[in-house]
Length: 349
Ligand code: NAP
Ligand code: ZN
Ligand code: ZN
Image (cartoon, rainbow, N blue to C red; front, side):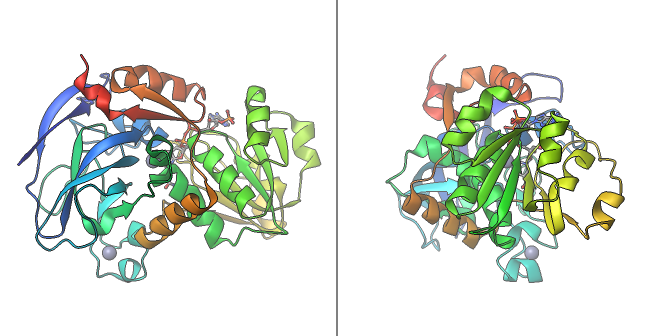
């Protein structure tokens, strides 16, 4: 067993606090990683507070993991000790169902194993990246370029791939008008990718204070979504809208942005369902869809794309002792634009 230290939620209502636990011995294809940085995703807050109703405690959150390989199992061949790697939202899947075979492990028909808060194939609870190390099958570990700042890479493992994948799937590129709703962890990566892919990008935000940052990250325009006149001006003009909002919001204010046959893709996962006026879909044959992270090959493709184009997350690096304050600031949409925990801080009091 590998001894691990991290921060865990003991219940939905308790703050995260230091927690010691163990991880399995390396099996054939496993890789042991010493964690350097872990991003703070809004999903960590939904999960730790049991907002989706499926939490398992104690819960060590964290699925935006970057670190260095310390050991590999006897059959593992992808990595060697010292390699910089990343681990994202899933750590296992069946590998044999049609989705797994298609490289879409995140849609595994048996159910992919989440990085934290579920039982894995060994019958053990998975613990995430708010900790000093992790043991994971090499198939779910990705190579990270030494060219990039590892703290700024960590959010790519969830916020990055979650926005990259639907933008690629729906062929966002030159000649397309694309909206990104919400400028948080996911939103700012969606904005950077859509801009990099050559689309005309409009950022929708509820925070006027984020306008200059959105322009710096590549927005051609920034629209205050709470201003009905400004929203009306943009009506029926978008090919694709990526909605990254974490809280319940009125989709009927956003669906009219799409032109005929336009696609509204939801990646934000609020804890309550929306109410939709069907006319907003019917009258222009609009599509409403969703997307979850990306497959393992696509995650590597995204990381390589980021290394080639020098794309990383805008981060506020924090010691783990500040995690509970960080959660509160994320809930107020007050993060520029992803908190990332420096795991060396685990050694501090
Ligand atoms: P985040 O950093 O908190 O960003 C969410 C943004 O939404 C906020 O910064 C804010 O942007 C906007 N917002 C918040 N409340 C709003 C409201 N009431 N009305 C309109 N806009 C509002 O969160 P995140 O880490 O990017 O995660 C976003 C969501 O995606 C979460 O629900 C998370 O669980 C989910 N998620 C899904 C996947 C997936 O695979 N599908 C992966 C990761 C995360 P402005 O200040 O610009 O308005
Ligand atoms: Zn996430
Ligand atoms: Zn499968």
